[in-house]
Amino acid sequence: MTIDYQSLAVRGVQALSPYQPGKPIDELARELGLDPADIVKLASNENPLGPSEKALSAARDSLSELCLYPDGNGFDLKQALSTRLGVDASQITLGNGSNDVLEVITRCFADADAEVIFSQYAFAVYPLVTQAIGARGVSVPAVNWGHDLTAMADAITDRTRLIFVANPNNPTGTVHHAEAIETFLDRVPANVIVVLDEAYCEYLEGAAYPDGIELLKRYPNLIVCRTFSKAWGLAALRVGYSVSSPEIADVLNRVRQPFNVDTVALSAATAVLADEVYLQRSREVNEAGLRQLERAFDRLGLDYIPSVANFIAVDVGGNSEDVFQSLLAQGVIVRPVAGYGMPRHLRVSVGLPEQNERFVAALEQALSQVGYGG
Ligand SMILES: *Cc1c(COP(=O)(O)O)cnc(C)c1O
Image 1 (spheres, protein in one colour):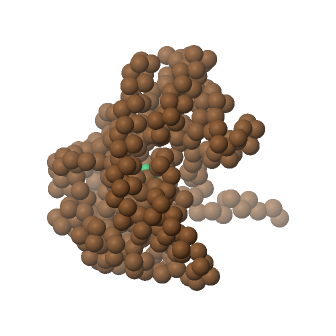
Image 2 (cartoon, rainbow, N blue to C red):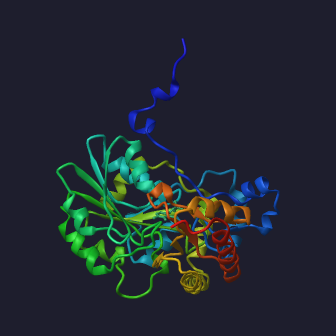
Image 3 (cartoon, helix red, strand yellow):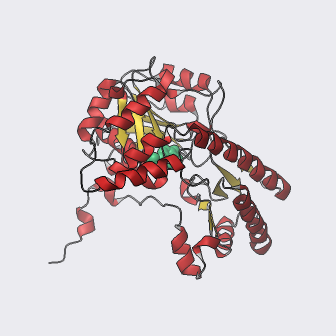
């Protein structure tokens, strides 16, 4: 008897498509027979500065402990975060990247009868984890590429258990100011959990933007998620965290894998929190890079979605797939976002000035080859 083993997977999983990551540099180098050093990857919102020296040195020092299980409670990292954020260590849940935390939250608070609300064009992981557990994802149409918080609040029903808000959002780079987020939170019933995903918050400066940690004091149904993958430059190590009430953290702690963050990651993340110079440079390089890309897009007559994060989505016209392929052939990797329902855009991460320049030159060349296509 032949069994279709795929049909044995639970229903939500059967209908799932895997997360599409940015193309790795080595893969493109193999395909094109290029030297990896000649390839520019601006596809995964990684920090172009390379890792912090403080993080590198801590990571190296931790290698002698590879034979031991990590500290399952992440004591040192939680202490460092607790000091930095002004919260109690009992409010912090560490994850294997914040993706891990997002998944654990979903498994803890939603089941097959639940509805989970997120925005159109929001981070792909929200629908993915929702569908994996068989819950119903409710995608609320965006306004100007950003979350329509009013419509998201209107979409709440008796079955709503969880709402994901990415602020800033990936892949659009849109952001809501503090007032809009607070007005939204005021409308959410206290028994509905709101996840405020602040993966890019370190790039935001100014009082106009909400500080999720501050909001926790007023909204006990809030969970704030952050990551070491972007501004802190540790994407390979997979470290993220949430901050919530201790009660919610206790629930998450029951479901997370006992050793979900490894020793090298814990050491590097703890060390990088002391590298204020690195963070400041990350911000400066990003700010300058955003302006550089905007100027180039203006010069080329291309529309883009104004972004406050470390990437920007640019409308390259009707032939975006061909533009993407032409960029690849020139050794420049960016991210197609057709899977997000944005078939005209490419998302480009902010690189170092010379990387941005390489991308812009390649884009100009691509557009002259394949045309804008209306
Ligand atoms: C990059 C990103 C994350 C974090 O991913 P990690 O798993 O921490 O690497 C979370 N949310 C959004 C919106 C992101 O863009």
